[in-house]
Image 1: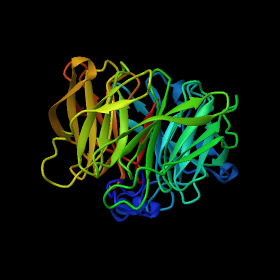
Image 2 (image 1 turned 60 degrees about the vertical axis):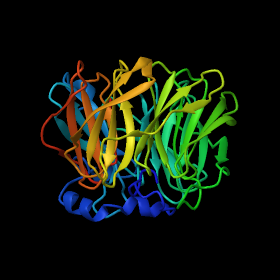
Image 3 (image 1 turned 45 degrees about the vertical axis):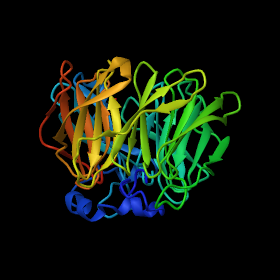
Image 4 (image 1 turned 90 degrees about the horizontal axis):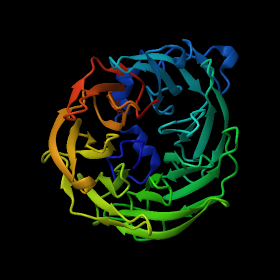
Length: 405
């Protein structure tokens, strides 16, 4: 499954199950905590945000950090968590919450930097736009239906004109137009993954991610339920998708997340169900992916569910989040991106790291740990790729996404 209950239970077809994996332990960890900061006051409680501190951009050392959560589970958050972080120390400070957004388990920023988008990972799936304000009083612009159940991932096309989303529960992908204001229009496309048949233990397709290739030429959708990565061409005038190729991995792999190398010639796929990663060659003209042999995650024989990979800006290192093993795997990237060489694993310092992200300057790595309701931060050594803990974990209710700006 995607972001909810633990994407680690690939045979769980019902979207609600994803959310509740680890909910009990998360409730204990987060029971006494506000949602990433002070709660909003009554005057702005209706789909708006109350800032507990000045806008992050007003402080030289503070950078914005947005946190995704589940609002419908015990111990969950109240909306999109707001915080700042210090790039030099890695210290996180909670500043507030954007309320009125249900189960915002994944977040994405518009290329302009002025609008934030969140999935509403519920049975009646939706995506929500939030206008970011310099004074820190962010405003919800509204929501649109995704036409499917439990959307768990979204991304903005590089043109800034289209929002792409993946419905985990119903195995489909959707496209929404983005207005000049950042608000979303009515859906222009909905494509269901009807074939190939689901993998072992799966009851249907489960779209887990949708991203645009670095050259902007294709849109790729990763489906955990039927072990397939679909490549589409986005018609940028109409907002529709046309399938041009597909890569079907070995049965039961459970591909969850794909990350491109900065060169755009290779992509790395984290397989949730068989606990492997795969290096794929990418043909920019056709959009075709060609997979290499599955590789180890370095987590040993125990049960673990890879969540996602991130790649450093210089293309030198890749990091994998392992749920179950509760670790981060470090790979060095060789041969122009065509090879991953496993170096080591380090403890993540939390329970069930579902999402990781590098800070834009590249000096920090953030891990959102769902079951422990924490965000842990690591300093990244630019020369060796080594990770070093930046200090005690930051408490955030059912943390499932961290988006540092």
